[in-house]
Image (cartoon, rainbow, N blue to C red; front, side, top):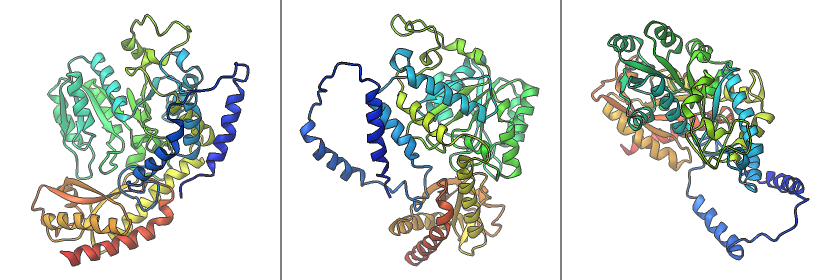
Length: 452
């Protein structure tokens, strides 16, 4: 199950890389502790075994997707050089690779002109986007939905910008009436639209938010850390499709290649529609930017040292799997979404489970059927534990009970939040494994009810 055949390819390609430096005088590299490496690596493997099998289709819990073999190999290959994509003389080749890869991400989202770079992850990418927003609209409030990632509130605190949450509708999307009501009061500088919330994969109504921008004059930042790649998918629902069709009208976008982009952690990306925002990054350094008159990535980034290996991995992956509609990469996204829709129908038509709303991407939430939200919550935790005993790994989420009201009129909402089960079917292999996941879930549910 662990791809070891590719290690032979790595050995071959490492030799080719070494040949590029054949003109240098030979030297014997000094490696401290070489004699004990094997023993320590055996111990490392033992420690790593204490993990959930994130790479396996029976792991259907959190948003964890294994990197593509080409990404792993390109990352490892770059580590022999260990480039730093800050100043050009620390990572000449990988800086160019980063610029090319980021331009391809921008093109996927509809931008030819842009400013952007890779980051250590979505949190840092969102920080940069909101930092720029705060410079453009100083002191003004940042709004995000109740189901937006908690990082926006934290980041606003770090930046000392006021932050407020906007209520969601019954499907976990930003409520437009609540948004308008807050905008009327004034003082809003930025609205964060989430395209793929962490808990439910819900897609905020971006088209309507952009219409409100025309009326109230705020910036629109799209947090598409999870959902951004679904701009390529051909099997979205009409509302989600409408949102993705408008993404190019945003002022800034965040997307995480280490989620659906098949990359190792950490690899995020921040993009700005107006390249002129680069002026906010300008700084003087007496030791960094004098090796070339070309743009150094450190000149448009809050982060300093960043791994060139991440750029090499993303660049290689996008060479192998271009970001085009109808391509192999796009079809893999569509398979995960198709698996989620199929699993949702199994849950919806079953007498054993409660469903909230159809998945907009590839994340869905559900709970064992019960008469009250309290009992459903207790059963959810038991099913989670019993499923793990059967090697089916789900996730647990605490979500507003009102999410369940539309499809479950008989359910007594005796508490404001319902503890439910959550599945992220983001691996293309999940399509073939839906039946097995369903079988194990049913058995886990029987066991959980018997135990209660």
